[in-house]
Length: 144
Image (cartoon, rainbow, N blue to C red):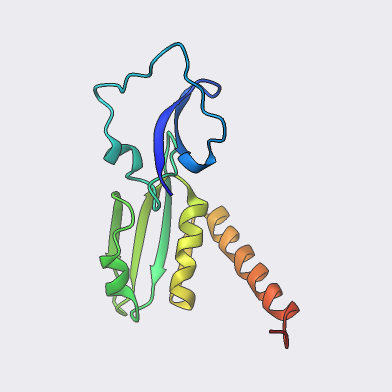
């Protein structure tokens, strides 16, 4: 997909728009001028996908087992993060993210080798996702 960053007059803020989601583009009377101090890299720095944005970030800490610790360290998904190495070879990585739900979904790619430690609401969100996945697999047992 291709995205653009623009000013949403209805919301009064910069927003990310998917071009294929714009069904009826209209030319307005006013032309948007990119602010001279706008930095696209900084705007997207706290997003895994580059499209999620928030005025304030949320700190999320994930513990990665020793099995995947080095790979998780190398996977710098957002700009701001802190790594704490643990005696058992695991690492705790704290990410500053625009959308905690985006990071929660991303964390599932590590399977049982990753555990969201905090904040509690993000930990609960991952737990609920895992339960929903388990229900889906139980419900489809024996089907192709």
